[in-house]
Image 1 (spheres, one colour):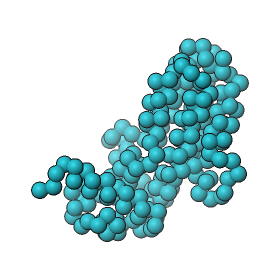
Image 2: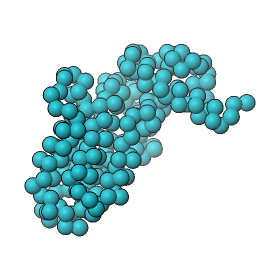
Image 3: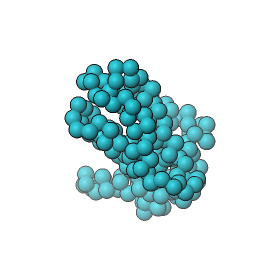
Length: 200
């Protein structure tokens, strides 16, 4: 009988194998048979941990990618403290890393209508999705505006969408071309352009 820790390690191994399978074969080619082989387990064992590919892909995004949620929480905790531009720049760097890592999965899912429909249903049922970080970031910016660290006229919803959109764009572009600007410099420049003129 496997222990809880052994079961956790098996699950982690399957998630890692799923990511490797996506990188090697693409979304369509990352079959459960190939994933199980990469993980060194049977398909039956794979299905003991996950209901199917959609759940596997979601686990890769939520658990294997560079973590976005902890960076968002750190930004939330720092509200009203420290250097606002530096705090948001740190978060933007984490967002770029997340979008760079998740681009191969997201693009593959978008390109498969049946998979996308199932995946959308799964996101809705678990109350997760790409809109949530934008919503949380907007609330953080509103708190900074209320605290007088952003100008009263700042449109926090638009700023959050623009910042996350720029990070998403950078993450995807990095897969197609060699970009001259390191991600941390890009993050700093974007944050300064968006927030610099309205920071108090």
